[in-house]
Image (cartoon, rainbow, N blue to C red; front, side):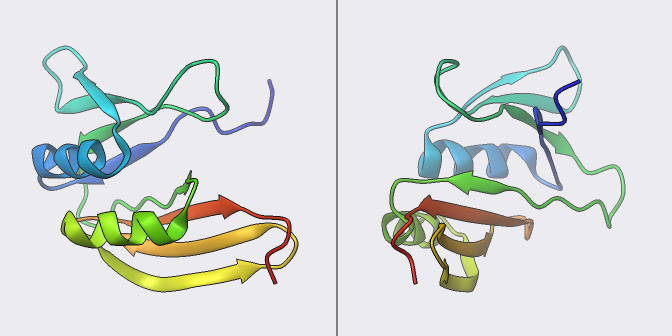
Length: 122
């Protein structure tokens, strides 16, 4: 057991809309898992750090998720998020000596973080 996060799930009312959002903003690829209302999310090259996960139909109206997505530029992704129908709910803020963080909601209202590594952040 590694104690590392190795999978995430994003519950939503409209999986197709949410899948389209993540494809447009981050270039993720999706594949439906059998006939389930569950789509596996391939977030990038298997040789690069990071995790894959899934998009699923909500099973409970209060089913939450929060995850942080590593990006090269928070500023660029803020523009992409807003253009794709998302909303910034906590603006870019520094994590001193670590990087930058902002929180947004996707079109279904789920909260996520975007993180940019930057040891010079103050």
